[in-house]
Image: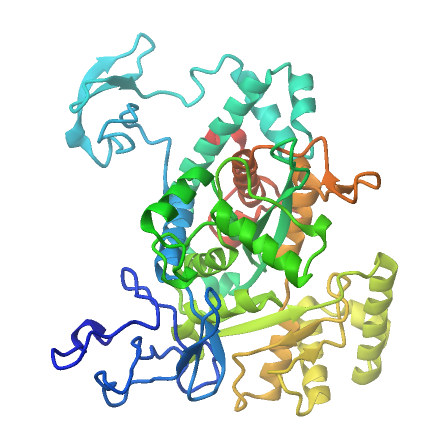
Length: 570
């Protein structure tokens, strides 16, 4: 990478940057058009005037334009634009997401929060501890060398008053039972119930940190098709004064064949309060600095968010009832930052495989740009494709069934096989027939614009697939196979399960007598509780809940040999 810090000379005035600094080696600001010869090439980050030092020979220039907070880089090769992103904020959010999946809070360590050894496990940092005998029940005890406090290591639920209720509460939590009903059925107080949710969350974090090793997965055999999408989860109004809901995005990537949820996170950080975010921004004096260049650009501050809503109202881009507010506790992460960080996490999980990747995603330009920027090396080498999938989500079940039957009838007509013969085909033979028929029918269809799949499933009627990474020299058979395989079924099926099985994630009820505001008596007021329950359900789906084949997604992916029961992680 070019060391831009050495470009300046004493003969010229200091150069001013026009693009954000890289952060710890991460720089995602370049042309993100996969068909461009300059795709992934970092341009000159400095402003150049007539009295400043000229750019070195061979360095890509282009232009940076746009209003404050909306700056973009225009590539001189393809004239496409790419919005500037805050590398520091993306890196910080990536580390937060990584910590959620790789931190083990159950590892025995000093429990004094002010101690330097707090969170440093006995196994990996033995120099911080002395062995200090055993408890009356025989559990080993340790003493911290720094703060001289002692702690013991035993069964996780040894201090629970009603540990016999843990299993049933865990199952209820993941099977559409509200907190009020869980409390009533089990005779557990809300205080103890919240404590058990914290306990489940910690135990699951420890289990996931030890067991989710994707370097051991054979993606050639298990499949390397992934689907990424987001759903909006609602929280009740945090205060009685403002009758406006809180909306957070739930961004997920699923392994299509197994249904395993590779990465899932809410657009919410409970470790940072709204007041802390505001104070940090004021301390850095960044009110007049663009988001892409800020030191604290990862989360929304209250002042910035309210200004953003005022702008939307002024532009009449939203109705008053569509507006939402910041959570009363914690901080709302900027969604574009979450998208880029999410893509970095997915790439890290797939770093050990050389299998060809197909990354399907919803028709969201921000999500598309995030994956194209992060997977730039894989795309340039031809090992990864981005497929943007759109379909008619508003159709009823009867309409979807008609679309499916019409597609079957068309396939029967084009292939010369009867409907009965089609039903007798194996999955492999049926897929091969679809590919051959579609390849012959596609002709010179432009994959960059989009191709409609004529033989849709019920789950994706009127499916259209657009491939921004398409290379024209590829065969018609390759194009047909990609159109057939590109799907969001894996992640959409998971979102449906979340809506159905997590009581607090169901779709909101619309109040007809309160200007259309959304509210539900079972919704949560604490977003950090929703963040924990979402992670608990992800674990339940991946490891504990078998499908019709008797296997869990972790078993299908090759991470587990059998179903995980509550006793295995509690």
